[in-house]
Image 1 (cartoon, rainbow, N blue to C red):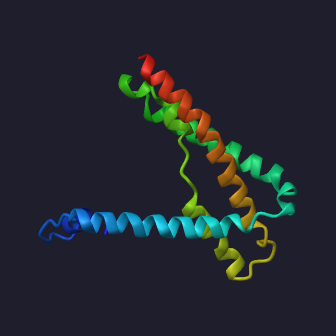
Image 2: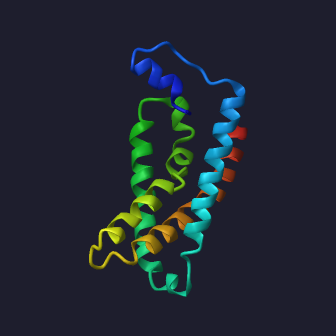
Image 3: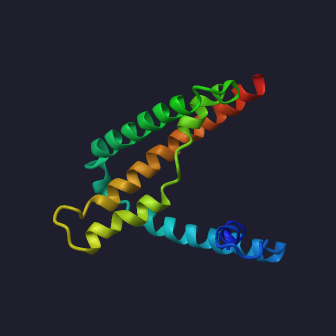
Length: 145
């Protein structure tokens, strides 16, 4: 539903915009699905998460470093974007897709993949915790300019 306008354009159909009621319904269903899944993911956290913390920190660090580098490359030619380069680099995705995909190796019985979902949950938590101060700092810096 959220991609209705784009899909109708790509498929060469009559452009269709969602009515406000349908948009609200779509937003509510999306919210419910995300909450349900994130609560389920949160239920995976247990005492063993401390054992995977070093691996999770390394993965989160690599994700942040690569995102910062990509933001730097993206903002090279634009002065307007240059001001928000660090904020762009630190605004990491929430991780819902990564969480879903982390269950596939476990589902298909790949040896050694049992800890994948817990590692992904830990990485999602770490990167989301990083976004909080980054967003505050970025908003404050943006107001100054």
